[in-house]
Length: 129
Image (cartoon, rainbow, N blue to C red):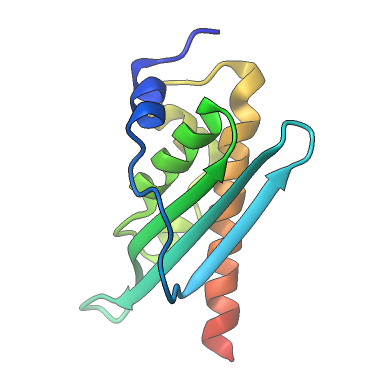
């Protein structure tokens, strides 16, 4: 399988890997077919305009090289974005950020965007409580 330099870089040197103690939102998704499991943690604060922005984001992923690379990439893309902007990050944005993925591995970018959305939904739910 041919991987781009970006996929290899994000796999061998993942960005934002780890957990956040006392996160504002946590999203966990898994794919039973391939066995990948992703967990994304969010820390949210207000910017000068009063909008909720992702001030910190981390991930823990159990899975293949592509699963780790897509987790790393989505955290890079989402960090510093408003919740509204981050909720619009698609699997295609993740794949583009990694200079493409083999078709058989596109489900990993889908899983990454699902994990981010799950963390955002968890944040919104916690905020209402």
